Length: 305
Ligand SMILES: Nc1nc2c(ncn2[C@@H]2O[C@H](COP(=O)(O)OP(=O)(O)OP(=O)(O)O)[C@@H](O)[C@H]2O)c(=O)[nH]1
Image (cartoon, rainbow, N blue to C red; front, side):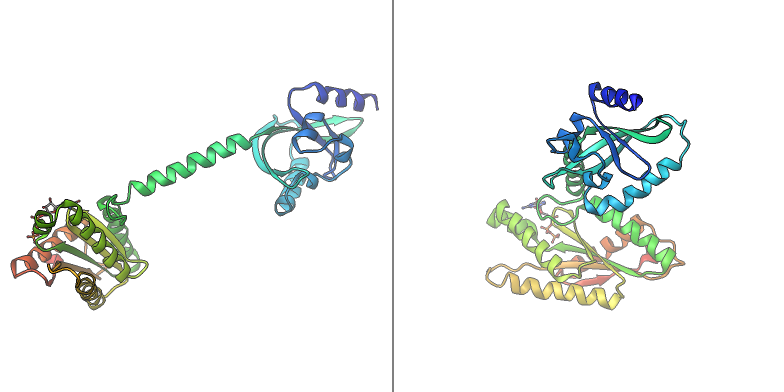
């Protein structure tokens, strides 16, 4: 028992929280720092208890397996470090910890020794950075004025659709939607009103399309949509609905808001489509609609581009 006492004294003087665990997953030693870290007043509240006392219920079974695997692993391997896990304090609050784990023998028995560091502030920082990166990622794909996808996100999504058609035969339609005489709206009613019209149009397009269609603003007064799994007729119907909704939406104004649109439908997995080819085809069809008097839909012929 002399060794036992020496080790108990040793883990008390080290500058880390520490615990020693036997093969049965029971705490045989804990130092004061660990006791306080987990919100206990006395070490004896933890001694002899299963490790579970320091863990939230949902992770206990997983930990028991890790502990068993640890005791079965090579005992002479170097100390494992940097394992992160969620712990639970006496009051039920969560604590994120990082541990360094090693094998130790004393009094002819085998144990696991763990040095434990409170990583809650590190976890909070990591979560904050992760959230910020996610926010940046979304911003980088979003049109700041209307909140729909931007050109970059649109091109990436179109590239995905081309691959899905080639690999899985999933057809899709791409539509270019350009406002007619938008310059006049800006010139007559001001840029701010112009911005509001763009926002309203984005809203009309988005609320008319299905949830898995993509709506993007790809230029000043130019929007584009991708209709996944849509036939040409489906896409035509969607665009007609957008036109109808637009008439309704702007009925209160004494100036019309109309759209010229081009559709490019892709359904042949054997055909070699490229983003640039599809964009050119849809754009050409949209200009054809402009040329023929605006406020109409034209169908693109991709192969002819
Ligand atoms: N308010 C506002 N106007 C914009 C924005 N981006 C581009 N524009 C304006 O959109 C107008 C686009 O003009 P044009 O490309 O000539 O198109 P149009 O007047 O719609 O004419 P057609 O396309 O031939 O029907 C220009 O006056 C741009 O200044 C924006 O973010 N907000």
